[in-house]
Structures are given as C-alpha cells and as structure tokens.
Length: 239
Image (tube, rainbow, N blue to C red):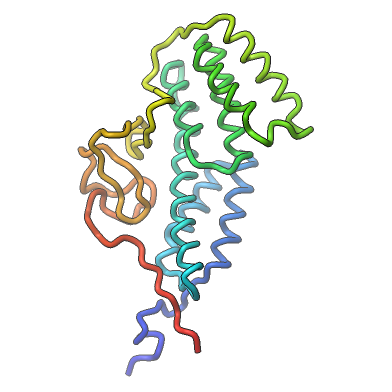
C-alpha cells in the first residue's frame, strides 16, 4: 500500500525552499571570500537539490527556477575565474576570460570584483580601449561610491584617464561588448546573438551545436540539447 506522500509523487524526504535559500547565501559568502572551489560545490549541490524540493506556493516554485539561474551564472563565473589562472603566459586568453567573467549575472559586489580583475588585466597587457570600457562600467556601479571602495574608485579613474590617452589595443580579442552573447559552458567562448546554439533543458546553459547530446558541464544532470518540459516544481497541497 502506498503512503500519501508516494501517491502524491513527492520525495520521501522532500527538501524545502528556505533551506536552499540559506545554502545560496552561503555560496555567496564563499564566492565573496574568494573560496571558489567551495562556492562551486555549494552551487552544484543546490542544482542537485532543486528537483527534490517541494514548493508550497507558486512563488516558491518561481524561487526554485530563479535559484537554478543564479547557480548557473555563478558556476560559469567560477569556471571562468579558475580558467584565468590556468592560462599561463597567454595574455590574450586571460583577457578574454576576464571579459566574459564580467558578463555573468552576479550580485553587484561580485560584479565589481570581476570588473576590477578584467580592468587590471587589460591595462597590464596594454589593451587600453578594453581597459577603459571596464573602468567605465566600474565607475557606473552604485557600490563604487561607498567608502570601502574609495581606493578602487580612484584607481578606476586613473586607468580610465590613462587608457583614453593611449586609445589603442595591443591584442585583438574574441570579445565584442556591444554584441550580446552567452558563454559556451563547454569551451568558455562567446556565442553571439544569432549564432547556432543548443541549451541544457534543466539549467539552460548555452553550448555550440557540436556539444549536443553530451552531459551539461554546469549541472551534470541533463543531456545537452534534448527537448523536455524542463524543471517542474510541484506545489504541495495544503492540508
């Protein structure tokens, strides 16, 4: 005889949204502290837990979908950050990865970190036009005006002034900030708007078509490019 939980199709020990929200906050803290492997593990755990989470209202179902999107962005951001450190003496690839890092949908304080790193890398390698772009974006962030970021604000202003004076790039990058793009989660390269692509049906990570049918590198759950209805968070019945 089936229990009510089994008849309803719910996990025997369902997870709840509030617990995932606390885990997400922990992931943010680890990311901010620069503990990237630990942060990635937290975001991956959340992705694994979401399909087993019971939503008690449509708003909670929406929160589950939002958490999948957040985890996707942060896992990709961490992979980009780690890849920067693995480039060795390849300034072109370092700058490209840094640029893609700044286009992940991160919390404002974390975007500030990404822009600071990208700006410093571009300026160091004499891509002054690119460095100026990152400096402008930094100076447009609300957080840059806080007292704790005073030194960074001054540095960005100096980089912008010097870069505008130089007005040149030493390296040609596969990066066009004016052309919207998604990052290929397998190769960590841009897929510009209008280019062929396939996606993960669960976390919606983007891939070039040649990666179709492989395992998603972000969530390690779904097969790339397979057509499904995606994530369905069941709303638990009120008793």
